[in-house]
Structures are given as structure tokens and as C-alpha cells.
Image (cartoon, rainbow, N blue to C red; front, side, top):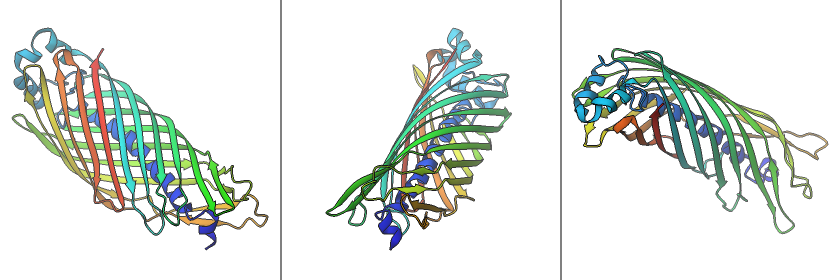
Length: 370
């Protein structure tokens, strides 16, 4: 049909990939801050494993850390350093990878993304922590070449900033984030009409992403085991500028592509667990979480374009897939607190029950006190 010919049968996967990349970057940035908030609570408890301090020492988890580590880890100057510092910093490096299966609306593609997040936060008292973080990210996706798909891809890089807060009282906690990011896209659309035409049309739009989240949970402590329910609301609004392609002047198949807006509103309800294990040189904290995610927004979107050289301005439309309304998030990780308050961690996050999408995120990080 006309749309398939005009976009060389990769229109929808390009538009769909742009949306998927925007969502992936937004969720990855939010996940990095959620990891920081998790560490501020020491898994699901009310203490920080990042060298920012244990918070309220009357909290059961704070007492558990003392009893688990003993004087060898928290006694003397080392203990004072871990328990007394109010200002702390962190650095996270994450790598995400995944692939999208072929559907009626979107052709298959795979992607990789890299993110660096650095931030500082301050503990005002036993209950309240406020912080901020900056992040740089880069993502690449490639369309799988098949008989009806000529190839192409998308490269994305950008910067973002996030403010976050955590409030704990006894076994209850409340936390929130507010973030903003700007991304630059390099979209490549290969046009192959054998044997005469083999060109690559390129577009370079910019996008802006406003996001926020609010979450709450409750901790139950039984010896070294801490567990409890959690809930969270996540919102993201991504605006992508309109753009004009270049590079396909000979064939006259460059496109003017309209601006695009995507909104995502999800709720998450789940359980998370941690278990404190003492060793001669560190306290280890294996962690796990599993949550049910429901998507309220992110409906199938119609995106429009016209040929640059079409005097009639006939509109070509492409539609993305309907969203997955219900799926699950799974997170596994381990943290280690070393002498002097230095902490390192490794996390793995993935999605389960998400149709036509496989997504994996690995995060390595360190925390220290000033």
C-alpha cells in the first residue's frame, strides 16, 4: 500500500522504535533513582547502606545492622563514620539490552542503552533525606533486516536531572522523584528500491521528558530478614519535535514528520525482601522484589508524515501497537557495606509477561560519605 511503499515498509517500526526508546530511557533513569532510594532504606528498612548513615537507630533494621555487624564493623571510628555522616554521594553505571518482536504494526528491532548517574543527598534528620542527580545516557537500536524491511536504526543520547526525597517513620516510608531530560535522536531510514535507488533518509529531532513518581511501603523485620509491601505511581510525558528528513533527495522520498507526544502512567504493587549477612570485612544484603505493573496510558498512537516534495501534502499515517496493560517487574541484587562506610552493589531488573518485548537492565554502583 502507499504507506508501506513510502516508508519502505519500516515506517511503523521506526516510529514505534522511537517511542520504545523514549520509554526505555525514561524508565531506566527512574529505575536508577529508585535504586538509590532503595539503598537509602537499606533494602526495605529505614537505614542507608550508602555511608549516609543508618538513620534512626531506634528503628528495628538499624538495630539489626548493629547486631549483625557487631563491634568489628560498626564499633569505634568505623561505626561513627557509617552512622554519623549526613552528606553522601553515589555513582551508578547501567547497561540495558532487549529486543522487540515483529507485530502487525511494528517490525522487530533490538536495542542497547548505557547510562551514567551521579548524585548527592543530605540527611536532614532521622526521617528525611533530600537529593539530586544528573545522568547521561546513550541508546542504539537497529531494525532487523527481513524481506520487507530494508534496515535502519536510531541513536539517542541526552542529559537529565532528577530531584528525590525519602521520608521514613518507624516502619513506614514515603518517597518521591521529579525528573526532566532532553534527548537528541539520529533516525536512519534506509530506502531500497532495487536496482535504481539505495538511499538513507535521516532525521534529527529533539525530545523532552518530564517524569515523576511517588511511592510508599512498610517494613517487617524478623531477625536478619526484612520484607514488606510497596506501591508506586510513575508518570512520564515525552514530547518529540517534528523534523524533516535529509539524504533521500535523489528519490524525492524525504519526509516531513509531525511532532509526537507519549504519556505513560503506571501503578506498581509488590513485595520486596532483604537479608543481612555478616562477614569479616563487609555486611552483605541480598535483595529481591517483584511487583505487578498496570499501564493506564500509553495508548496506540497515530503518527503522521508527508512527502517533502508532495505538492498535494497527502498525509501518511502509521499507528503503534496497543500497550501491554498488565505485566510484572522483577529485581534481584546484592549490596555490600565495607569498613569505613563504603558501599557497592549490583542489581538486575527485568520485565515479565510483557508481550513481544524482552528487556534486561544491569546496574553497578557505589556510595560513599563525605
